[in-house]
View 1: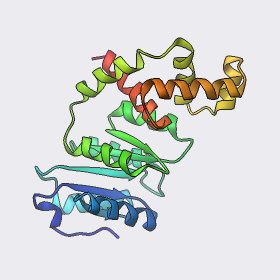
View 2: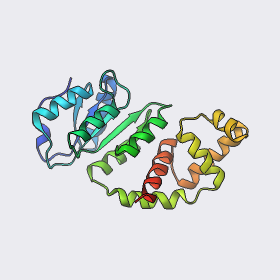
View 3: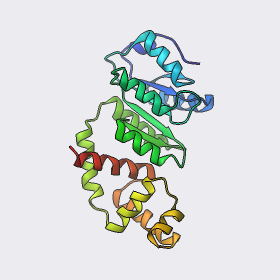
Length: 214
């Protein structure tokens, strides 16, 4: 259940955790507590919108961390509704494996970030802190353009296909390579970008593309 309290109206940094899995909500809330970040937990997007209608937004740092796929109001539709309401609260979406293409579209639409499950605690906290600190997207985009520019042409081709949600095997079929060769290219591009996951590489690529459009 969502916590309809006024606690987040204090000076605390607040993350609204939205997931239909109670175990996930509680695990994230515990992680945030260890980082001294207040968590308001909600079991669905509609519950969060009710909270927002009751208490409204404050000037205190806050963001939304929502699962992408949920019954009823999913993470993307929730983001769209917030945007339509003129809300400026940053939204981070959590995705399952295979939702990369959807996450890419979400970031291009304005979502602050996406985290792929199962996520690394440090990666999640870094994303949350960036949202809470309102890191300027221009700065992130400039760095992303530089780092993506280090990729060799074949590595960029592999990354582009992975961003479409294709598996290593499917990428190999498109490029006429062996699956093992694609795995090597994938490992090399991640090392060149200095990232620990495909999700991080995808975020960089999307930000780089957005940065070139600025």
